[in-house]
Amino acid sequence: MSRNLTADLAADLPMRIVDGVIQPGDKLPSENTLIGEFGVSRTVVRAALTHLQAEGLVETERGRGSFALTPPPEGNRTMPGSRPVASMEDRIHLLEFRIGVESEAAALAARNGSERQLKAVRQALDDFTASGEHPAHAMKADFEFHRAVAAATGNPFYSDCLASLGQTMIAMPRTRLMTGGEHNAREHFEQVATEHASIYAAIADRDEASSSAAMRSHLANSRRRLRGPAAAS
Image (cartoon, rainbow, N blue to C red; front, side, top):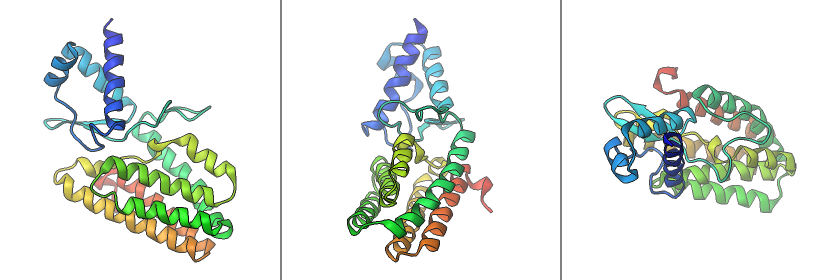
């Protein structure tokens, strides 16, 4: 019975993130609040939080509480035929995979993208830039930017690959949860917006080498940000 209650709670909290009730980086309700709301024991609440931590959806800091990291995509969190992204190591591996795939995608987008497709990349960039005050919207717009670049390759396998990864490929960096989190979050957002703009500019200039380099730099920076300040050079 307790496992069912744990599963119910572990399913409800990610849905709140998807619906925007809890935005990425927001503090989750306290244990006492969840106990009262769901009518469950403290053991059930802690088991549910442990489950979400294992899936990389929640970060818990001693003395501060638990924070939402990234919303799950619609449907299954697992790429078809692949392992789930269930730990920080998995997220780092995913970014390394993306560096190889998306760097080439950016070069192909510069070579092959139609004017309509480049306009879609530009629109996705504008949508992301305008979403800075809304973390959940920013993560969706971030994903749509990368999807638009993949579509501009003209190769449907790139689009299918990113669609299978889903929005959880956009990971919430640990800087969002550190002391002074609002400043760090704003600084992080501005960095990503600048990197996205550099990618778009290179693609729009039809510069394949610069497009690939800009995407590689952006994703390498994303990997560094995900690891947190301790990994910064």
